[in-house]
Length: 338
Image (cartoon, helix red, strand yellow):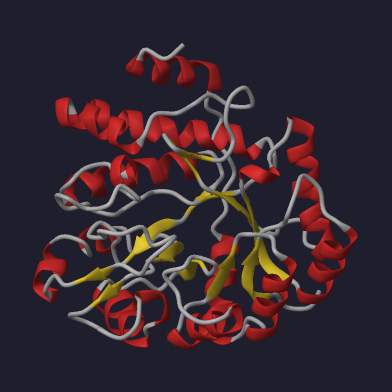
């Protein structure tokens, strides 16, 4: 089996087209990501996941999804229940920390029950961003709290729940997306906080969880570190902060390369991400012309990138033997969910 290339790809619809099959077979992305447009009914999701893996001849290829709860939940009722937002977990934690951590673990474990049955193995969770007053609601109620201690505690519990179910988490958005005053899907956020302030808050959850195997970058400029480049394309942020100060040596993927916070065409963006030292370019939209540009711009995984990718693959564990019905009943009682 030939080595994978340094990107994760989406696809356009509910099943693969012949063009997509040929593209994936030739370009060999490391993994895939699903969005709402890829979600139909239960068998269709499982079939699409199998098609994606078959296209590259790798039955263990990671398949990712953003399944947080709240407004960021790609698979929704009636296929799975609607989960509360991260802020709702945080509310329980503020009233009763022990109960809050139990709620977070349960939600992670229930996500794993839901997703593993479709063959989805990676959840882009936890959200470790620490919002500041007045920040844009692109994070908003996705955040677990407004202090790094709360965010860390809940994020760790959520991750442990996912891993108990055999899935892997992706921490986001490193080194911190809480200070954005614009939506990075549309504009480039600029953070003017000093380095010491960032060290006292934004970086702390990631430092505490630096031993997780995967993380996603933030499309944000931190003027105190690199005033010219967003973190995703900044060698200085990656080298000095993410790999250095935070100490993260896991697999680092970009946030979606299609987001308008990044400048240049798709090939230039992908080259900038790889040049900054990230391991993988994440392309989500399923637009073939863009996918080809990304694939042409990224290298085959080798060296530290390959080492980190192999470490992530090796980190998948077997699900525990938890009783899904009992855990779901316990969780729903916490929120009086039907």
